[in-house]
Image 1 (cartoon, rainbow, N blue to C red):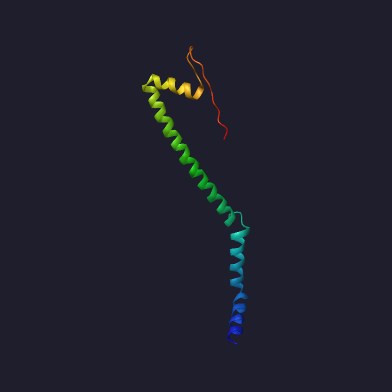
Image 2 (tube, rainbow, N blue to C red):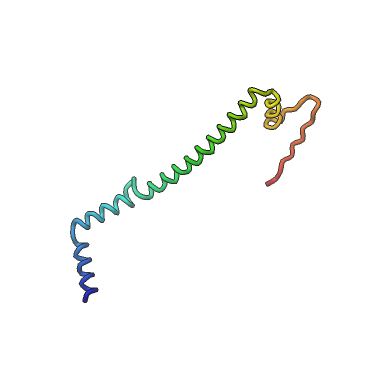
Amino acid sequence: MAKKDKLHIFFKVLKNRYVICTLVFLVFFVFIDNNGLSTYRQLRKNNNMLKKQKKELEESIRTDSMNLELMRNNPAEIERFGRENYFMKRDDEDIFIIKRDK
């Protein structure tokens, strides 16, 4: 009997119009609305990706700034950079480029 009474009370509470309105409201705003849970999760994922990208770009800027400062103070560094990145050479040199397959 106790189990049947609890079930009866549960259905009685569910028939209350305020409970029904609250449940409909929650279902609508969590699943159906444009600002629902799925949109929130997607925006959070996008935000985390952008934070990671920002961190990588800041590290790249830091590295490039250090390289630029080295090149401003040392002409030999400019030559090294040109040789490594743009395959520049002196007149009496030959360059052999070895590409590795990954």
